[in-house]
Length: 182
Image (tube, rainbow, N blue to C red; front, side):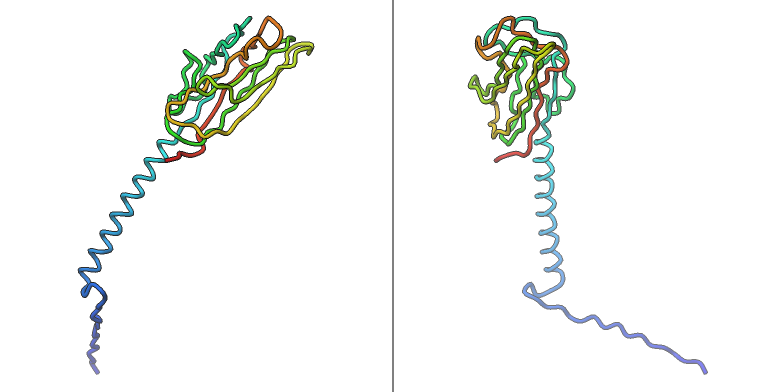
């Protein structure tokens, strides 16, 4: 016995606030376009926040003058190209929250170093001296910085005992952006 099977496809008529399927599809496409634009903006902000640097002294500094900038001339990392190994300054490329680190290795003499933001001291380091070989200190700070702020590490005045010596390679300056602030 031959039989015929009949399939019936029933598509219900969808109604909503827009009244038809075409209007709902257009609304969803508009929402999707807005989300894609927002996603592109967020990706751009993330790329703008890629700021990280790390540098060390390539040669010893045998006797620093008071308030002389320490030049960390051997750049290890410079994502965003915001640190200059010519003048020793980190120029903040975008307003945000930053983490900065300094490690100083000195000599047997007492030495004081500070980090400055726009020529104002914000962090201090003290190498105690008296050690058989080298005294050292490390410090870090988390700061909200503005675009264009200048951060540098300097010999803190005449504090300490001459000669104000900075050892090569083990003296470092590093930092990175945690996040941007609009």
